[in-house]
Image 1 (cartoon, rainbow, N blue to C red):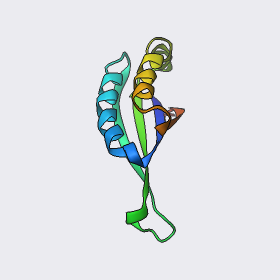
Image 2: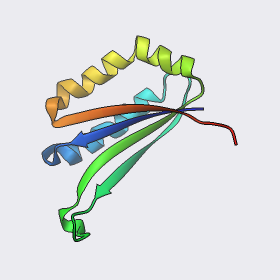
Image 3: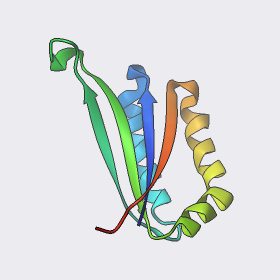
Length: 106
């Protein structure tokens, strides 16, 4: 199993709008070959006093893909168009970073 993780630093001005858009975007991505499921996590960063009022948020999307080959196919055939959609709508107000994990069998 492969976990493809996308961490999204989002400008607070567009956080709600982006979050709503992201749900539909993720649904489109998991329709591609090999994608099994996904989850969206809201990573909450508290201030030094652990005050929720001043917390900032980072969204993390974790996709489960059956093989690295299917993830590579997504990168080769679909990723550019899928990323462009978000870039066209939100530009530099969203800064993504990406990681790939290979799940080891215990």
